Image (cartoon, rainbow, N blue to C red; front, side, top):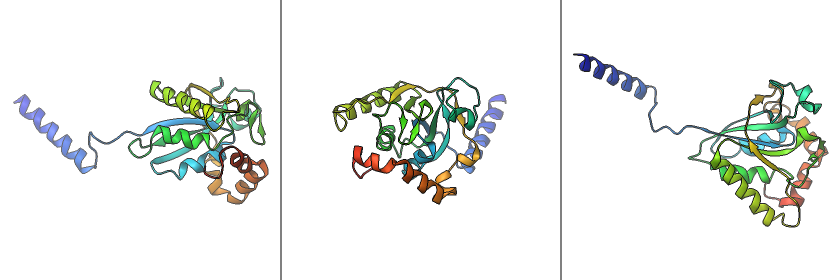
Length: 202
């Protein structure tokens, strides 16, 4: 009797999952973390990539819990401006995300990125597991021995820690404030430097 009741419960539960469109073979989303200077500028190239579900601007790599933008921008917390990327690994690979990352930063700049100076604007890859670390190391070695062979690549690869989402007004800034964003990006000289490093394809 107990087995019959248990079987009925399982069948009802499975029917509920099926009705909700949920199944055991649904691919879980993966997460990547990158710091590449101003996080406003790091969201757009990932947002337009098929398979990327969401990007979030935030802070990572520091010692202060739940830091504010004011604290991070002052350079007193050890955090870098970073982006969290949620992606479907069946559609876009981590290797592809690494490629997008490199071509949207200056990995030879140890003092910040473009017009933004200071450790809080450093470039860094925050890996979540051994696989990501191996892929990140391989990709860094490839560009160091390839396109940027004559220059020193200084981008660090470290273990991901706590990520703190930035204030709401920073999220999707390039969409909410397109004129101000374009002016900032132009004034910062980001695209000119990227073209010098990587050519026109980013």
